[in-house]
Every structure is written in C-alpha cells, then in structure tokens.
Length: 280
Image (cartoon, rainbow, N blue to C red; front, side, top):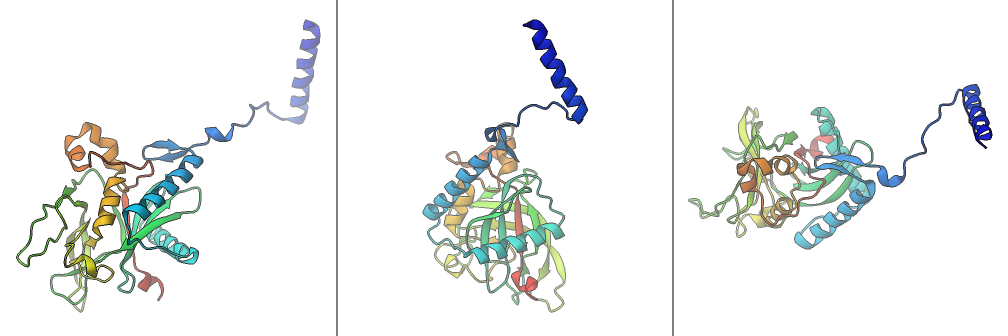
C-alpha cells in the first residue's frame, strides 16, 4: 500500500515535469472574488444589490428625479470619462461620483457608479442650476474633477434669509459640500477673465429658487433640489473620506447625519462636464 502510493506520486511528478506544467491549486470559487472600494472590499453580487438599493431609494426619496434612455446614459458616461481622463483622475476603485452638466440647455446631474474593471452605471439624477452668464458677480461653474476630501470641512445651512428674503443655502440643516477654491470664468465679462471662487454644492430657497432649477442661476456653485441634497447626505454618496476618518475626528463626525445609511460604494468626486462643448 505504501509502496503503491509512492509509485503513483512519482508518476504524477514525472508527468508534470515532462509537460513543464506546475502543480497549482484549484480555482477559487466565485464567492471569494472581491472588488476594492473606499470602505474595503465588496463582491460583484453585493455591488449589484447596492446599485438596485440606491436606485429604489432614489425613486422613493427624490420624486422629481430624472431618468434616461440607454443611449442617454451612455452619453453621460462618455462625457464623464472624457473629463476624468483630461483631468488625470484615475479610477482605481469602485465608487460613486456626481456628474454635473453645466450646458445651459441641460442643467442636470447624474449619480454614476464608476469602476476600473467594468462598464460604468447611471444610478439616477435631478435638475440643477450652475453659474449664470451675463450677470455681474456671477461666475461660470468650471469644468473638471473636484475632490470632496476630509481636508475641507463641510457645513450645514442655518436657514436664515438674506436681504432679499432668500434662503440661499436652503432650509436649516441642508448639507453644503465644499470643494475648495477653484478657478472660474467671470461670466459677466466678454473676455471671460478668471478668478478664484469657493466651489460648493448645496440646496437653494425652496419657495423662490428651487422652481428655477434646470437653468443657469447660481453665482458659480451647483444648486440641487432639497430632496437630492437629502439623498446625497443620507447615503453618503461623496463621503468616502468622511466615513473613513469620522470615528477619529469629532469635526467630521459632527457634519454627518446621525441616522444616515452610508453606501459602501461612496466616492469623493464631483465631475463637471459641458455637453455643449463636447457637441461642437
């Protein structure tokens, strides 16, 4: 019995040597395949479930959401990829991004799942307002990739009125995402001279300005509906850095909602495109 076993082992080793084939372990089962995210790793099946969950949540929480045909989704993805490549933004992990089209004829955003290994997917979107041209003191929202990092502290609207009886950042408690100082064109000048603006994404006055979403109206920031503001906030769509560091940083923790439902696909970038330019 023992001699026969040794003979069989010798035959197997000889066959491997003759065919120059290394003895390798059996293939790993599909359940062991994982994809990198900011929160760690996630399986392809979990990604599918999370995408479906986010789409269902968006349908419930953002009634005025915008939807696309497959061709329209491909167009959004193509423009986002082009700006990401031009900006040197490397997609090294699966994550969500917010893509804003500043084209005056579009004025919408899409939440898109981007990934280095497979095709990107559109989750859904809404109307927005970006920088208005032709009005003094108003800047054109710049095109590019703008990172949302824990190096800049977000804040929440106080819900107070300005001298025109407008709540410029929306109702009290609305999130303001801060992307730092960015260079933008002065929209009121013919030569489009540039200056630095504080680029932010936030809600707007629910009584007077939210109904104007869908056309340029801001001083350079990105205005979103209150429902989209809450969705991005509740699900931590751009909070990859915040969720990672909040346990050790009370300042970051104070910004996050206590009853949030953070997605494991959270990202850290807003991509601004201009379909009017890409169509030229």
